[in-house]
Structures are given as structure tokens and as C-alpha cells.
Image (cartoon, rainbow, N blue to C red):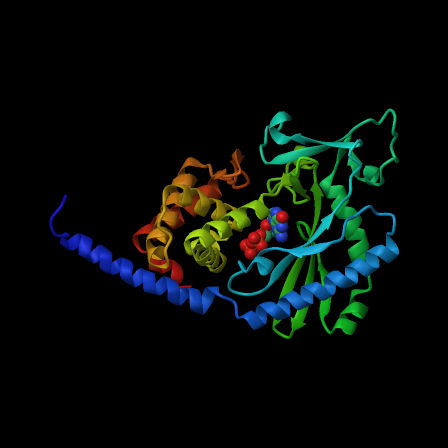
Length: 350
Ligand code: GDP
């Protein structure tokens, strides 16, 4: 310790400096989306959302919904590389006395972060008392069945070619899709994918979305996924505002790396955001000059969590954000990132 830095340390410092420069150059050239492109994509999503509202009100006037709205990284300035996707949130209204939520850890599936929504009081309020009883499977509200209701409506009773020609887009439902997705071609070479995301906001403020468990075994079919997205994004932004930090920039860089590198495509925004939030609890320096150091640390954090097979969500440590990856996927992600530790710039050459 002490004294002059050794040769290895100097070389390391030089490497860091150039990584720092490369990261910001990558950010400008590949990660950031021109604001004009974002605006056009947002406009297209908004047009579709407006049309759908009109059709839903006209064709399914009894369906108890709150107003649909658009959400996702395109609206939080966290989208990277191309402005190509958004979520259309569809909040269902549930009668408080007829439905209750059961946390996944209290079920035989023992899955924190997922919930069952149970129909209550069937003896006093028989089947049919709630509009959503039509989506009840085995006493629980089935997200799959809810999605099917919308699927029938969106794919079956809306004349997309006609609406598309009025709006000057080419619109088609994507089949098959894991959720329910519309493809909107808004310029000859630009496409936007809009996911329908039915949503339940429970009494205790818990948000549940109808996005199936990825390794959907039959017994997982009734599970609703808890969404922490609003809290995660707000937390990241607040921390950055407090110290003019580079957490959002760091997130965007790693998101772009994962989007551009097929071997890392399995890592999603929620996992990456939580990894940065966890790192923020240990690391105070998020100045723009520290980007390279924090980026390398982020890679190391991810490798560590992948080795452990576990990445907790900071809003509920029981939730394992890697629980939908297979052991083989975890190995491959860990291996790719581990190799990148000795040459982080390789991640930027895509
Ligand atoms: P990106 O897709 O990587 O740009 O990241 P986003 O932050 O836009 O996340 C979108 C993903 O999060 C989608 O796969 C959604 O299904 C999922 N998600 C979970 N909860 C929410 C939510 O409350 N709102 C939105 N828009 N997406 C959510």
C-alpha cells in the first residue's frame, strides 16, 4: 500500500479512462434515441390508444375498466437504441368485496412476486355477480382468460386495416404472442409494438399485471405478476436528481448492451434497474466521471447475482428476479458477463 501507483495500476487507470470515453461515445451513437424518433413513436401509440378507447366504449360498454393509458420506457425516457415498443395499460375494476389477493408465498407454489386473485363470497354473490366472473378459473381470476377476452375483441372485432388507413399506419395483431401485441408500422422502416397489459390495482396499492410466468407450468396459469416498475423507475430517477448522478445513463447503456447482444437478451429492464439500485446502496459516487467504474461494478454485481442464482427486488427482498430463468440461461448469462469483465469494451462493439 501507499507510494506511487504500480505499473499495473497505471495501465488499469488508462484502460478505465478509455472505457469511460467509449461508454459516453456509445451512449451518444447507439443508446440515445433522437427525440424526433421518440415523438413520432409516441404519437403513433397515442393514436392507437385513442382509437381503442372509442371502440371499447362502443362495443363493450359494460366492461368495468378505468381509462387505458400508455406506459413504459418510451414515456420515461429510458428506451434505448430504437423507439419500438410501449405498453397499453388496461386497468380492470374489481368489486372489493368479491375479490381478494393472495401473495404467492402463501400458496403451494411458494412464489414471492406473484399473486392469486380469489373470488370471495360466492354463496351470497353467485357466479355472474361480477363482470369478471367470466374469467374465473377454479375460483380464481385467470389472467390468461382476461387476456383472451381482449384478444377476441382486438383480433376479432376491430377492423384494423380500416383504422390503419385512416391513421396512415399499417396495424396488425401479432399472432401468436405471449401477451397481446399490436404491430404498428408507422413509416416504411419503422415499427412499434404495443403490448396490451391488463392491470389490477389492489386495495393495498399492489399492482398486478396479466403477464404470464415465463416457465408457465399449468399450475402457474392463474398467477398475476406483481409490478414494481413505477417504484423502481421513480427511485432511480430520484437518486439521480439528488446527486446529478449517472444511474439512468448507466441503465440505458447496459440495456442497450443487452438489446444488441443476443447472448444477453434475457436480461430485462427490471433486473438491470434493481441491480443498479442495489449497487447504489453500497456506492455513493455516481458522478458522470464515475460511469466506467460503476459500469464495471454493475457487471460484477450481475455476475455475482447470477452465480448465486438470485437477484432480490429492492422493494421486496423475497422476490427473486431471476426466478424465470432456467439454470442453463443463468449459466450462459453469467459466463458472457464474466468474460466481459476482462474486456468490457467488447460489449460495446456490436
Ligand atoms: P424496456 O422494455 O426494456 O424498454 O423496459 P420498460 O421499462 O419499458 O419495461 C417494459 C417491460 O416491463 C414489459 O415487458 C412489461 O411487460 C413489463 N412491466 C411490468 N410492469 C409494468 C408496468 O407497470 N408498466 C409497463 N409499461 N410495463 C411493465
